Image 1 (tube, rainbow, N blue to C red):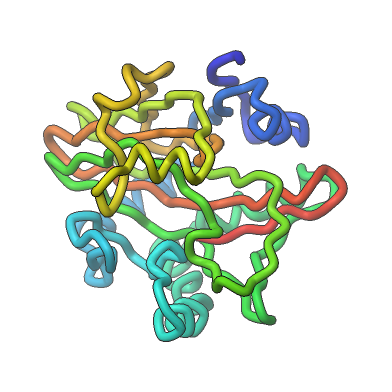
Image 2: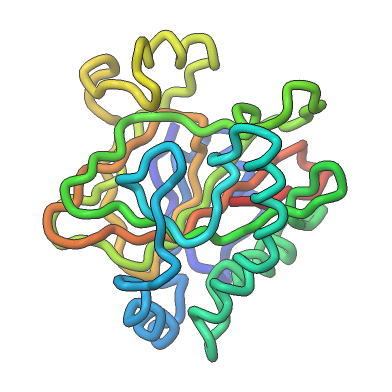
Length: 260
């Protein structure tokens, strides 16, 4: 496996996406994806944004919006979909008068992926895309994997062949905040075994050193496979702020599904 491919939004292709799906690239990096003026305007609002709140299952992690990963029952599922459209608009308002990076990303994926891309729909309800996530000073994002299935109803049919993640970086601390990638994808049973009695994530000492340690810059975009083990080192001086997006891959002949 190669490590991290570097490209531009103009040169980004269908094959860049499949390279992460197929494991020929560990990740794809687009430096400077966000317009510098849009980045500066949004950063002025993000640090003390009034809608910033704690994740339901881990209050030390803050976010603007309500994440699909917070769904745990029918009530939280209904809340997620009820707030989805408003949360998308909230992020647009934050970046106005500039285009929201999540909207630019959605258009890029629609144009780049041959069958197109659209919001994830379950039971006729459309997902939210573009959550803003905060990792504050000294907060450790332990090694973990992400899987849509963990938050789906037990009876839901599921056809995903792969799940991808795209992070757009709004703020990066001077000290810490590096992304760690192990390049290994444990099955769900193996992952639960690594978790042991933990409610979330796994200990770094159970899996050895990461294959790659990568520190992005504000405005960058990174496409990766979140079903592979990954982590983020604690921030030493200021919050690490990202816009998070998931991509559902159903095969090269089918559209991508997008959610946060």
